[in-house]
Image 1 (cartoon, one colour):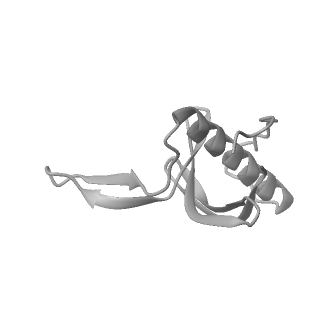
Image 2: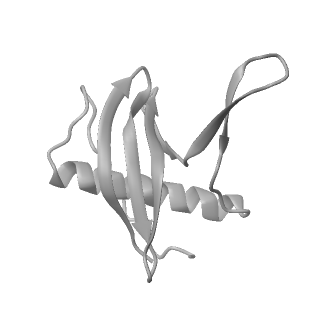
Length: 110
């Protein structure tokens, strides 16, 4: 199953690069609000999340969409990151000093 980035909003601040909306499946399911991050040469995509305060009053974030199987979750997020890279490359969206990464992830298990 292919994952497609249908929108990316560049919003660079600290390690955050921006926000993406991803679509997959047939019929298509679109999830909005993924965040693309980069730090120490590593890039990753995190699912949509909701902000909350813990008992100590600290701001925390909880994912609102996730797979129960951590391996499937990682493959999905890696494929989503790749889809964002393709979208950014096709739309000439570049990040300060960062190269786009594209990798073949093979068949997806979902």
